[in-house]
Amino acid sequence: MHINNQNIGCLFDLDGVLVDTAVYHYKAWKDLANSLGFDFTEAQNEHLKGVNRMRSLDMILEWGGVEKTAAEKEVLATTKNEAYVKMISKMTESEVLPGSLKLLQDLKASGIKIALGSASKNSGLILERTGLAPLFDAIVDGNHVGTSKPDPEVFLKGAGLLGVEAQHCIVFEDAQAGVQAAIAGKMKVVGIGQAANLMGADVVISDLSGITVEEIVALIK
Image (cartoon, rainbow, N blue to C red; front, top):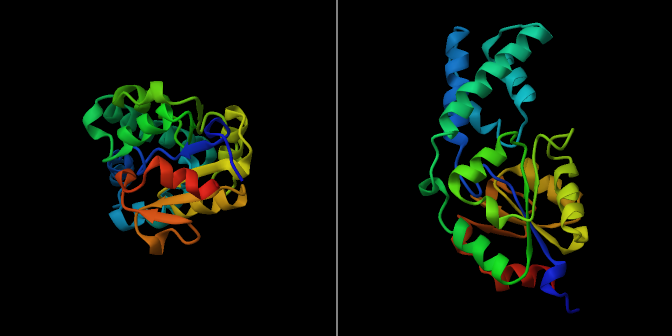
């Protein structure tokens, strides 16, 4: 079966795939936890990968044994986000992960469509600060979806915006919930990281320098 490159879509998660903003999320959450009188560890932070802001806050409050009203939670989530945005506003192109820029450029040059599929509500700012924004044909993030991964909504919307069928899409993910979302959406998955944390991925690489456009196309064809 021959599929034209124009009918292939690549959907990228943001944090941990293209850029590493996890360190900023961790610092902002840790500062918030400390202000509430308890600590927040890097091991706990691992559990928040791919989880949206309010659910993350609920998990952290649970770990800290702290109860808050819905209104108080809104204030806390806003406080965390403001601290995070202040940090990512200082990001530069040097923070793009190895291989990311070259792969995006190669995909673009080959006519393959590119979308972002991220839970982040600050993806626009991050892509702008790191110089990646012009390489994307569509952006679907936490401002456009109502459900978190492992629900496939974010990727299905991305495929729709690209005008590409789900089975002709390849998702790039660093979190198990994201891999599950891609599989639920009937898409191929390239996992970034350790295979043990990415069950079900079609291919696992350590970063985006570990795969070529030809190998990506071969996953579909």
